[in-house]
Length: 285
Image 1: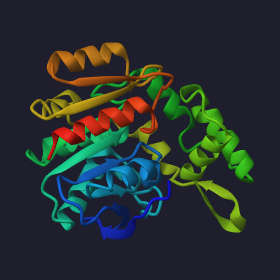
Image 2 (image 1 turned 30 degrees about the horizontal axis):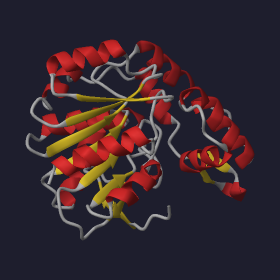
Image 3 (image 1 turned 120 degrees about the vertical axis):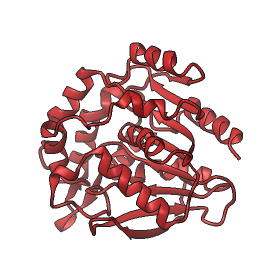
Image 4 (image 1 turned 180 degrees about the vertical axis):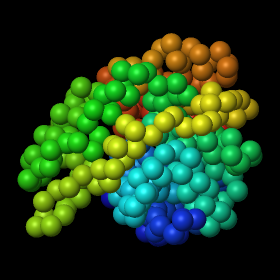
């Protein structure tokens, strides 16, 4: 699907130029903002944003240090509280006071942070394979390679590296899918050589920074009265059935959608994901 979108930048509170895409700018209804995973960017939402953008306004930002957004000279700023502040600044600049959030992994954590920081802002959430508690095995896996992967020399190697990182969690993708996945994760640098499209210092941040000060379960409680759909890659090493049970105990109306043959994270184009997102959007004017 060829996506039609506008490209923009805004300035963060500490002066960084941060990038976002806008789909369906003139459409009515509650806008949607799509927040990406730890080392991912707005390109991960091209298909779903183009689809939703036929009827709603959709915003897909690059967090600082990713994609076309500026890299932060202070690596300690790479943490969820900063991303929440940046997202609030973006929504304020766009004069958006109610929003539906689709958050993949880190983006889902930021959705909780937005709801806690600004009551009434978040009208509904799709959390993609993430909860207020994270399986330590998954954390250790991500910490082990983020910012440490060997540079590649060409797109064939970029595709192979992408398969090595994500292959276990995304069975059944074909060669075209893996090329598309790589093209969303890498950009061409000097001489056309692919480079991972994020600041390697993000890896240092997730290994060295202490956990955020706010209790994630209290942030989750900010969504107690908000419609939330949880997409669960059933092979995930980040989101376990035990964590989901704890989430349901605190929020009995949590809608859990298992996504077969997916780990961390579903790509949002799986039939289960498309149907779940459509159903949530139908319920939110």
